[in-house]
Length: 512
Image (cartoon, rainbow, N blue to C red):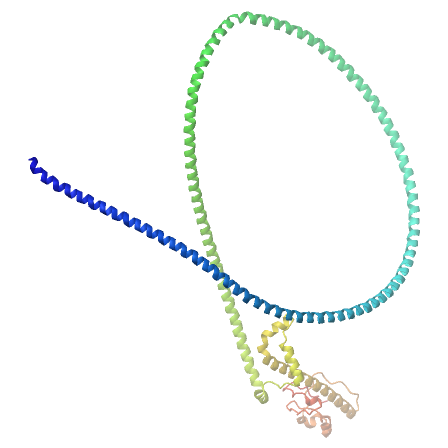
């Protein structure tokens, strides 16, 4: 059996040796590769250090050469700048010298002007000083006169006041003497009364003091005897109690030692109770703090809710108010627009009526040409183009579109004024014709002329022989104007004004 086992063990040992040999070879190869890698790394590091040193040296040389080139370029540029600055400085110095020379001349002129102004000012000051001295002399004279008058008045018032003061002093002295006499009498009587009352009170107090002293001495003796008897009885009664006191004292010492032991135990228990109470208090504080934070958060949430509610109510109220204001404003706007529309319709109706009353010339040329010359027109245009300074003028700038309207309105206003003047002229002419007719009728009848009625009947050519005027009536009506006629005005006369409207002429004189 042993011979059979040996061949099996030998192959197993050979396999293990091969494995160990392979492992040793692998380890040797790894160590060789590691040494080779370390040598390569060391060689590369040395080479890198050499390259860094050489690159740093080359970079330093390059920087030095570059700095030298930059210094030369900068020096050349600075030389050119210095030349330019020197030229500029020379020009500036020349300009400054010229300015200084001009300023010196201006200063000399200003000094001369200042000297002249100073001399004129001193002359004016001398004149003012003389005028002031004269004024002061006048004022001093007036002051002296007023002072003399016041002094005389003061002396008179002083004499009257001193006399009155002496009279009042004598009266007050008499009153003071009488008051001192009354005071002395009253003081004497009060002193006598006080001394008598003081003697009575002193005697009464001495008597009461002697009586009380005797009573207190007797009472003190009685109390001393009572005290001696009480002390003896107390000593006899407390003999047995002293013995009991000694026994109780020993018992008390034993009890005190036992109490100390119990006190130590009680202190330990109290310490544990205190620690437990501290923990409970800490837990209680934590719970209270948590509750407080919860309440604060709740209050904050409630406050925020109330704020949101108040904001919502305010927003609702504001929206309601804005809606009410908007409705009121819309109603006001509607009423204003209705008034504007009504006013516009009225303006359109008036414009239509005015259009009907316009003449052919106004329809063709609605705006009268300007009577200003070119220079006047340019001046007016320049004045209109200047920004106004007054607020009313600035407000009128917003109504520039109504310029044509104001032209036509002014034209109509001028025509109205012309018609009024023409009417007044016709009235004066009518009154003159009435006076002539009254004189004529008075000469025919041989009666003194009488004033006509305030509202006579109109006299027309168709009245004929009934008027009693005969064929000579035409002479009284040579210059009269019939209401239905429109005479053409001639330039330079009262008829040069626009023709009157029907019914605007004065009434004709009535028949006698």
